[in-house]
Structure formats: structure tokens, C-alpha cells
Amino acid sequence: MTAQHASPEPIGPVPASAMDVTPFKPSLVGTVFREVTPMHISRHAAWAAASVTRTVLTEIIDGARRAAAQEARKKLLPRDLLSAIDRNVELEVGTKWYDHSPTFHGLTGAVYDAEVVVPSRSRSRSRKPSALIGAHRFEAGVKKILRSQGATAAPAMVRDLDGIASTFLTDLARDAAMVVREGAGNRFGTVTLVESDEPTPPPLLIDPLRTPSARRGDRRTIGRDDVLAAATVQLFGGNLRQRALTEARKATQNTPAD
Image 1 (cartoon, rainbow, N blue to C red):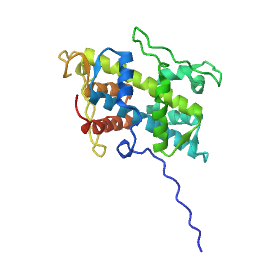
Image 2 (spheres, rainbow, N blue to C red):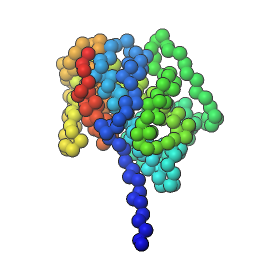
Image 3 (cartoon, rainbow, N blue to C red):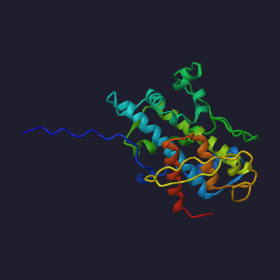
Image 4 (cartoon, helix red, strand yellow):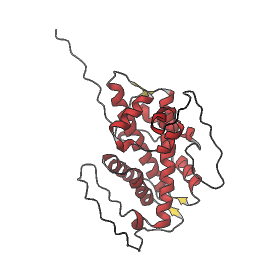
């Protein structure tokens, strides 16, 4: 009898639409935004920000899984994170965290104790975002994404994913607030969303002298499109950005408006 070999486990990100998981609650997203700006964040904006963060973390974990698979490992280690970023520059997000993590000391030139504990600081009255504020709040969501990907990770790897999620969402909140203040059309152009099986349209030319704002809504509320415009800043191009925008649109289609 001929022995049958089991087919290798496929490596690839599980689409967000196929995940039975909501790792980053809109209430948590709202908390992060309030630490950055006094502006109100709409429900659609909170869901969009949660979706974009999930897509980014899913892609990072998938890249780390590929690196671990080359060493016949299933448990992810911090070096798998570095390998994933080295192979795909699109994954280099949440970079403020790099200054605080032993994993990235080779990139920043600083050396940290491998057992360093990064303290959580209280909320600043000036509302200035910090890479360290409340990073631990994302650990549960990170672990949910890991489980949805069929992966496990060493505590140090979970810590880094946790920190990257925190700083990425903080940066997203900061840029979304800036979009509201300055107008999406003035600074970032128009966000165009397409389905994943549709060709990506050519980039739009932005007129730097354009003065009328293309943004809709008041200047006190962050909306979904403001978050998507901010995502185009944080995710500077390529498949990850388009996938994040598409998944965010899907995530808000069935979400009740405010």
C-alpha cells in the first residue's frame, strides 16, 4: 500500500471576512482616539479603525508564520517578526514601538535588557499620544488573531504584536484627526475603494493648490472616510493598503450608523 502524505498546511492570511473574531472592540478604539483627540469618533469610524488594525496584524502574523515554517516551527518567535518585515516593507508599521522593544534594538542602535518591562504611563493631560500608553489592552485581540490564524507565539512575540497594534492605532487616530482639521481633499486626495477582485485604479493626481475641502461632515467628528484617509498615510502603498481599505468598507456595511 502506498503511503499517503498529508498535504502541507497552507500558509496565507485568513481573510477578515472569514474570521469569526472581532479582536479590537470599537469601545477600545474609541478609548485610544480619546487619548489622542477630543473629537468625537463615529461608530462607523471605530469599526473601520478596528478593521484596518486587524488586517495589518493579520498580515504581519502571516509573514511571521512563513518565516517560522521555513524552520519547521509553528510557534512564532520575535525573529520571525523581523524576518517578515525584512521581506515585506509594507509591514513596517507602528514604528514608534521599535524604540521600546528588545526585538528591534538592532534597528534603532539601542540595546535593551531582554527581560525589560515597559511600564504603562497614565493618560497625559496634553493628550499627546505615547507608544507605551495602554499597550497591554491589545493583548487579548492579538491572541484572538493568532488563534484565527492557527498560530501560537512566544510571550515576547505577543508583546511586540501588542505594542505594534497600540502604536499603529494611535498613529491612525492622530492622522484621522488631522484629516478632519485640514480636510481630506486638501492633504491626502480622494480615497478610492474597490473590491478585491477588481483592478486597482491608477493613483489620483493631487493639486497642491486646491483649496476647497472634499471632506464631508463637521470638524468635530471623525468619520469612516477620515479613518480610511488616515490609513492611506500609515499604509504607504501596495496590496496591504488596498486590502485594509476593502475590508474596512465591508466591516462597516452592516454596522448601524450613529
